[in-house]
Image 1 (cartoon, one colour):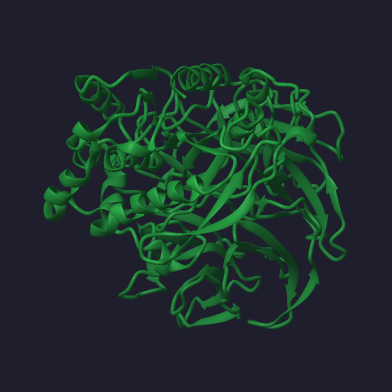
Image 2: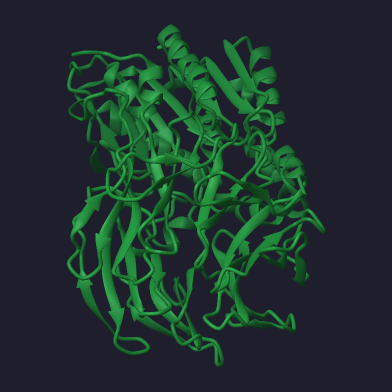
Length: 599
């Protein structure tokens, strides 16, 4: 079997985040051909794309004006997540800064119906909270129309442009929905509740009298519902089932909509149109590559929609779907760096039993070259923890499979995608139960014929980095090595130093400094480091606003004091992860060399 170096895999491109232009013909998208995502434009399927932005930093979104041949994009600096907004003409010739608050975050809230104004939320007044702003397209300054006291984002303008739908995140499992009157600044709370409830994917109805959204109110899984703006009454449209409705896009002019269900990590899409307030007829079920799909975006007539699709053996590309027929056309052709797609490995979806008899889902990939009892395994643990490992393309995973490693990706308790009860099983005092799920996964791996039980690696990023550190300190005999990427090493120092706007939100998941400090100290890997045996590699970004770089520094220091082989690599121009190609190459080549040495 031909093997390829890491740089080759990391040059596999990704095309994503499509947006139709005002004429419904042109399509913008983000692609990382230059090393970081930039804005590109296509005028037809698989035509030669035109690059519109040429920035050194990654672009994180781009949104066409509904009337003019221009778009707005967002960009931070060095991964600091303090996104600024810019206007770009459709030919890419002129970039106009719209915000100039480099110490603040700006969350895009969308154009009004004629593109004369746009809305956003920002913490420029107070770092810990977000206010709502409206700014004229030709204005230099924005007007604050609502002074917030929490984490607010703008979901979109009403069809008559008189109001904004606003969402407040209390925690990752608890949201509120409001309607904000643009002229008066009055905020109407539509979703008062006591227990945690998720509300997401908020869309205005064509009449402007309701919001269509996804929610788990009164159910374990999320369903599609209609929320009346006047009464606050909530009525199901697509009933709750075994799996979450995870995406929803409604066209305000036609009443057509597209929703996706997350079925064991795989997206199943349906295109439909409303026949009444809570009734609809299905139009098509698009035949897309099997994997995970983004939310859709309609063209100007709602005859087609675009979305991003990625699978385990399919790098991310933009597809355009005919709403009525479901006929699908791939518009982008992101390069695979000359790597043959047939060399990519498809995982098996498995389930294993954990300590309390619960079944834990996981994706298990085994290279074709695997020999019985000789195959090393990387256990890759996702972050979040309110996240889910899904069958999406991973250059890192495919590299290691090509080099003879198996790959195991568990969705331990606390993962989303399996209902709110499952997602809450690791909250606060139950935190270490999720680490026990990892241990049970390793025991399951010991029974797999291909696996070498003495060569199993723990790897993960962000919260997954904590899971790595917890696993190698709680169950030290199981691991040949650990790779911690932007991970939490001590919950107390993490909560003390994370961004002010995130602290309360994170405390709802992990426990609070005021009430749970002793417990948080007890489960922090830095305080259990005497157990560590496995060599450790720590990678981080110096500008990380979520998990400050001090977490990497302290775990590397205390692990080295135990006499454990430790390597640390910090990137000065990165934040919570690695966005620049040259940094990704250095980071993951270092991972490969580290594992070659120790595994």
